[in-house]
Every structure is written in structure tokens, then in C-alpha cells.
Length: 104
Length: 397
Image (cartoon, rainbow over all chains, first blue to last red; front, side, top):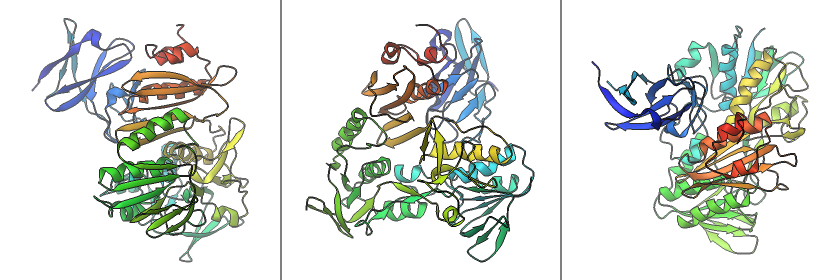
């Protein structure tokens, strides 16, 4: 089952950057890649509580602001110490200039 | 490649062990730790009251990676000629390559013998479990450990006094403006800061200051720096100079022995330094692992530190040079970053403080700008509207 949620406008996210999106008590991260695709993951690092939206996006990598844990935000894959648990990812679609994520 | 032995199961040793497997090492890996606990992260010890330690890796992961983890065991000596170490229980373990990741121990100056120190999980438990409303805690040393403990103790309701011999806090690692911002926050939280005053003597329930004043306390903790654990290396005849001396690859003068993390002194930018930092321990552990497998690269990561006090986070990239001026970037809500450029304009240091992770992104970018040797326009560093990513990528302003 899907539960598509309107997360933000396309223009709310700069290229090669991310924003935080809170919904139903959960925090998500919405990314816009250098080639203008959108992705979504859990918004909190799997190593220690930190909001990924304060972190840095370089190409397809989000780095946690706290201890530089790195993830590929397209797949959620943890890219090595200190993080060893992958980030959960969510399906994304763009319609009429809005970004929707499937939080189900 | 034969068996690799790692002495020290802190951040550095553990990272080295896993990095060896990641790099394809197929021989044995034995990781020897003196503490009985599953290897844990040290940074949280002063920042939170740890009920349970934060482990670096779950126990099953050691087995999966075929890392033999020996806990609660001390190494008595290294026999370089026979290439084996002797444990304190008399048993011997052979090695083809040996990594010393022995870390550092808390320093105590003469007169401070009665003070507690905070270095291990057991230290943290004995200090933090005792803290509570009304308890008077006196801390010697206004560095990261002392100030993080002060903040944690205030959260638990203790009354806190910090005594620092220098005229300001954190003098070794951050500029005065940042130290002043942090000092202001501690004063707001009712921490008494006594600066520019040395300690003459510590008793169990008081500190006598150099000027004769007496601070009464229920508990005295010293956070006055750490000394590298070099005994094994020194007794084995390896060169010691503020740590175990290694080359850029992190190899000692014995080609079969490497050293990494807090215990080693390594070349960086034509100087020789020893860093006590979580990130350096981790990166050097990984680097030493590759070096033991034959990689010739020199370790060249930019030093990076952080400290959490109350809701403030302080982050540092590079090493400060007191002879250089600053460019200041204000990020709003009191958060700011100070940048230092050398006489050729190259960025060499950045340090920032703010609530939450306000400075994190810019400090990370600064670290990469430093690493690349970029010479930014000071006006771009100063202007918070300029995304430092454009400086990093060389996009003209």
C-alpha cells in the first residue's frame, strides 16, 4: 500500500542539496541530485541522533553533520565507518512542480 | 601476508582491524584490548551520562570479519627479533605485522594525584553516577573534556567550578573569540570559571589554588590533557618523541611495526604532531591497515575535532596558528566561524561554534577547501550568503 505525501515544491530544494521534511512524527530528508533527480531517506543518521538536513551533499553522498558518516542517498547505503547501518529510502515522484514521497 | 596483531581496542585499533578485512587481508587478525568491555566509543563519555556504552561494533561483527578480539588482556612486552608479543598471563602471540594503537592516558600534574580523571568507561561511570543535585564538583582544566563534563554535570544538577591555568578556555585549539563565546555560555549556566589560576594541591575534598584560595568540593576531576601510551614501544627500543615516532605511512623505524592514533607522533605539513581525536584515530587506523598491506601513501587528512557542550557544538578543521589573523563569518543566532589564511592566502584553519549543527556544513566544506590548498577570497569567506561549495568547486564569485 502506498501513502503519497506532498513534501515540498521542486524549487524548495537546491540542486545538490537537501531539506528536512517532518510528517506524522517522523523526520525525512528530501534530496535533489546534481542531475536534477529527487530522492528521499530517513532524516536522522543511523549512527547517532543528528538531522541529516544539517549535513552536506556532494554528488550522490550525504554526510552527517555530526561525525561525517556517509550514505549514498539514492540507495541509503552506508559508505563506511562510523556508519554501518543503511538509511531507509522512500519512493519519490514529482508532479506539477511538487515533490511527493511514499511514506508507507 | 601472515598474521596481523593490533594492540589497543579503542577507535583506532577497531577501525584498523575492520579496514584490514575491507582491504582484502586474508591472514589472521588479533585485536588485544586491556579493558574487559566490548570496544566502545569514548567521545560520549564526557558528553552524556552513559548508562550503557555506545559500542563501536556489535560483537557478532567481529566474528563475521574473523577478527579475534581478546578483551581484558595486557601486553607485557614486544620481542622484535622473534616478532611476537608476550601477554601478561605469560602466553605469546606471533605477528608478521604489529599495529600499536595504545592510545593515551589522562595526565596528572604533581599535586593532582588525588584528583579523578575521565578517560575510560569505568572512569565515566564512577564520576557520572555520583553526580546529582547539590553535589559540588571541581574540575581542573578548561579544555574539551573538562568543559563537556561541566556541561553534563550541570544538566544533572551539580554545582560546578572549573579552574584553568591559562587566561582563557581551550587555548590550545580554538581562537579567543570562540573560547569567549563558550565561556559566556558556561557562566549563563552558573558554572564558576576561575581562569589564569594554577593549582597548588588537590585533596579529596578541596583544591588549593596557586594564589592560596581553597575551593571546597565533593569531587575533584582533572582534565589537563593526555600522555601517549608509549611504554611498550619504548621498551622495545622504538623511537619516542611526544609519542611513538612514525613516518608518513605510520610505520615506525621497525618495518614490521606501525603506530596510529593518540599514541603516535606523525609528520604533517613539515611539522611533527600528535593528535588526540576520534576522527584522527579512526582515519589513522584505516590508513595503517592499508599501509601494513603495502600501500605507500602518506597520511594527509586535515585534523578535525568537535565538542558538544549544552546545545552548543564547536567544530574545528585544521590546526590554529596564533600568528595569523581571522576572517569572521556570522551565521545568525550567535553562530559564527573564524577562518585563518596563511600569507599566500591558502585556507589553513576554520573553527566555529553555534547551537545544534549550525556550523557543521561550513566547517566540513572548509576542511575540504583546506585539503585542496585553495586560496579563497576573504570576502567570500566572510559573507554567509556565499555557499562555500562554490569556493570549493572554484566557481567564480
